[in-house]
Image 1 (cartoon, rainbow, N blue to C red):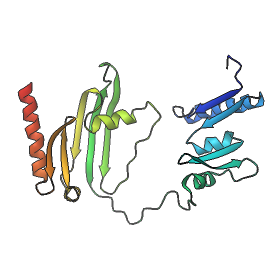
Image 2 (cartoon, helix red, strand yellow):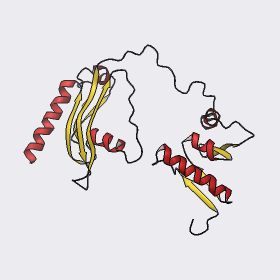
Image 3 (cartoon, rainbow, N blue to C red):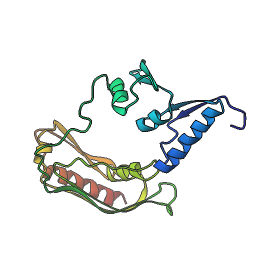
Image 4 (spheres, rainbow, N blue to C red):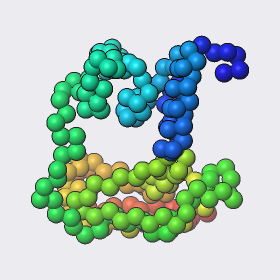
Length: 220
């Protein structure tokens, strides 16, 4: 802006902002428009695009599909999504009927993680999660809120240090084991064993983990 810019290209400018901050940024863009400054905004937040844009170009698989003009074409989210996916989206969120929610099969208790380069900076603080059979569970938050750090620290401990807490996985999961041709057993971020379809079992998985733990103890 200090260089008297005539064109601004904004790529996901609101990805790390909350709703209030995003609205302020969009209002600034509209003010810049009044000053004759052209803005191109790239965003996956369709409500923001339809609010601020005079025209919307839909791109799919590297090709321009169509351009919609405000005041001339339908600017609704459903219309934009139709251009993006190539079909009518009659039911964006399908109803899950007759879904039986079962017992807890995965649980995280009092999970704490510190930054990999700064042992004093706590990234995850006392997180507790329960996932039940039949559930679809999502983790939501702004960029930097800890979603990625939480997932990476839980699955294989591929992030962070001074990790503490408990992970409890139900032993009642034979249907998952029965679908696998091969199972790699992961322990402490390392492959602890490999089992083929003929000899995979919960008992063999636990044996691999225990053997890997004993190996680590000997190395220490």
